[in-house]
Image 1 (cartoon, rainbow, N blue to C red):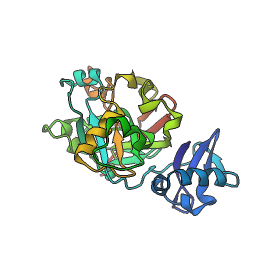
Image 2 (cartoon, helix red, strand yellow):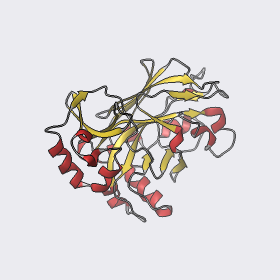
Image 3 (tube, helix red, strand yellow):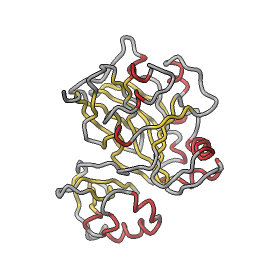
Image 4 (cartoon, rainbow, N blue to C red):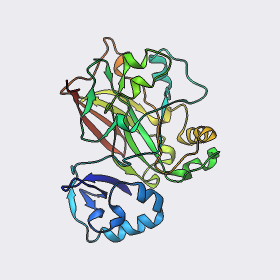
Length: 286
């Protein structure tokens, strides 16, 4: 199933599913689907059954219906750095033997179709094509062999990065957490729609239509299952947690000359079978 969350005309959000050439607004048919995906994640199979029932009488909207964040307030957002060999090398890093993890705040991300913001203090605004796992079943000390059973679905992520602030210290927090600098969405695909752990899928970024990153998720250093197992060693995973799986080579800071996103640009992230996550770039208001 391909879940999504839409912005409604009354200012609220509602859960929908993508069905062919339409977005089916389930929230108009069943109160379970008001808001975001958290009640759906928590309800499990009962939500799937309710969605199939609600689809018959629910309104069908255009595919370009305005999107909201799939999970409005995820408990935690984990991000995996240096998870493709060539990306680690282009940044001058060794390939890690343990996942290079950092965190993002909810204030640092926007949904598909909402502008990403280049801050006033820097021109070095970079793109990173990624996909994310959305945790469905929480737990601690999750075995790698069982880890994929804890995934509700997968979505797209642009890990927008302010490179000069990322490199001010060995800690990446500032450069990865500027307000509205990253994006998530538009849809969340359930695991049955994709190969196990999303392995073997083409991943791209395009800036104003020009392909800049073009790789395959087979090249990940750490798999989704390995990453979930590693995180759950130190933190309880909760339903709605997001785990970003890293970006391949081709980012702007490694180009000669470097390539930075600027106001008026459009950045697109695409992973095979997922669709496209697209955002315009705007400058922070003075």
